[in-house]
Image (cartoon, rainbow over all chains, first blue to last red):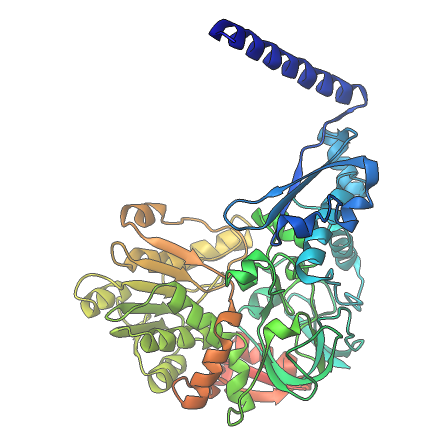
Length: 157
Length: 389
């Protein structure tokens, strides 16, 4: 392949990618959301323990076809990176903020599953909070109860 | 069981709360022998740290006896007298395995809270708000200790309870400041704050080979205690020019390592104190950082400032120019006692490290609210009130 052909094919690939990206965004906007980004954790275990014979860890496997998952070796002996994103568009802007406030963010279960995978693979169990968390559920306490109730599904992950 | 609970700003009471249970296979239940108040509790008491809930049990510096263990606890057993590290870690994540225990990836059951606040999720501490896991504290008859194999350490025979209790937090926190601050032979080290942590940091600096160690405070009884039990030099900042003294005592260079052991409610003389208090009350800054500013200002060129005092949020008038132009290294951390506690217990047993003098006011759990009042307001020379359930 000469240089010109290489450039053309590169242009074609690039153009194809651009079309795909546009279509992806259009698809998302038609349903009122945006495409999910990759949510990623690094698990301090070797790749073959994280994905045994190509199988996903249980918390992620339970999300089934709702998610796409990537598993790759982390740099610097840090273990294995596991990334997941929802296939369906997710709410953004005010709708996204509203969903988070209502505890209906579809990304929440993905975050929880990733955190649970890490805990299970690294320590063998997911740590449970103290119960009951308080003996005085007043107004401020209720607010904190809501926040802590969702804390495993929230954050920047 | 009985426990000391937080019920709002400056509002504590002793109440009946449910007994802790084994929730995870790596948990242990410890019957508390002694549980110390800590300066960092005052930030909770004063309402400066959010994510507290009425009924939360305070306390994170303690020792006791193991009375129950989960199925996967391998190293610890029922009947052992243990001192427990205030921050606990799983021992398996990358952070724990790289000695960064208070940054554990798996210990905090509320990771989203600190992830949103600080950018990354923090580890977990006993009795220190729901942001750090919402774990019940040690001012109680019993406490659940997650990951007990990694955070509970047997106390050698011959080490008293009143000495060992400070190996839970004050001693490892202080040691970490000197260790991670890079104190080495021949250094001049200045420590801001002569509370329990400051005294332990000063002693650690001496044991790590510092040539001169100078501790700074304003309370005569704390300065005297530090001189007597730690054996370092002291400066009363209300009586002299701290900067001038530090230059004089370091050959005009300034201290090689400055350790800040004061935190977000620092006091200083003069109008800066009023300025910081006003801004804090108006919520224009969450923390008062006067000791940290001084540490940065007085540190020698190319030196290190280590921040041990607890800060929770944002500070104002941070001397970035001094930090950059003097080529300083600034570091801070919540304590990582798992790296130090066995060694510290050995040093206590050998007499290298004296800790029992910090317990100025032993009292019953029922007297906990009074103990915090004495501690907060420095009544009767209180350095540490220590509760016995």
